[in-house]
Image 1: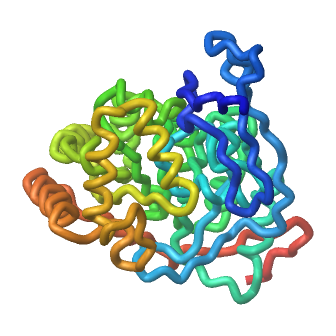
Image 2: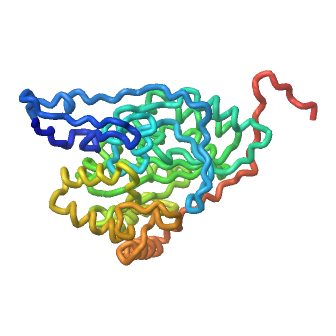
Image 3: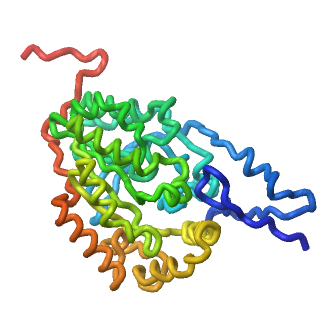
Length: 361
């Protein structure tokens, strides 16, 4: 029997493999046929990003989760080239019959008509405004945005309607849209959170290979705050035994960058992500893989994931409580308040559409 080719880390990519999604009926395994040479791996050299349109019929995603501070969001993209190995959205690629692994970071779908679809939904007579979240599942400022400008077109619609929104990103690309953000911030219509997972550039390069470096994220946070755009830090995810030792340093650095709010999330490993994260640990940190997984289980009732409301974002048990206390002590010491989406929804108003007549009064 031919031996399976071992999975290996690939430069510039987060996942170390491309496992089949949970809905696929077959699973592909690469085997050594005698011609494979590790130093000349075609997959390593030719793994290129492919970007395709997504024929979405609507763009606003609703949720009724009691532990999420917003009830609606817009995700301009499916998949994310940042390649963050821990991304909880990875399993969503299984619905496209693609792998949550390398497919997630190399097969990117963009919502080509997102702006027009959003405008159509905002014009509905029964629409009631509430803060709109961008960048919840995948980063709305990932590399594809530089050319496609889908996020930019969405912000232009939200600005035209005076619709409040929040953004979560780890990209310096958000600075391109300072003109819209600063104008909206003056009317309390925008709030930004920069995701800072680690200050260790080496760890960041392995864990989130195509995202902005930690230093660049801090500079982005500072630039936004100096421009009058209220920007905080989302220390997420905290991974027991891997980056949780940085909690205080992360908050201290973000306080210097002017962070106005702070929040954290514990690592989540839904569906296929559990095995993928384990493979990543074995590839990059084999000496501490068992310890990290043991600490995660201590925070998840003996499992690697717990999807219960109220526990999925912060975990439970003594170790999770230590993380929570350390974060809040550091937060209090630095006088950084917790995350609150206190945006003004009263300014929402649909602008005149093409062909509409102005009223007499």
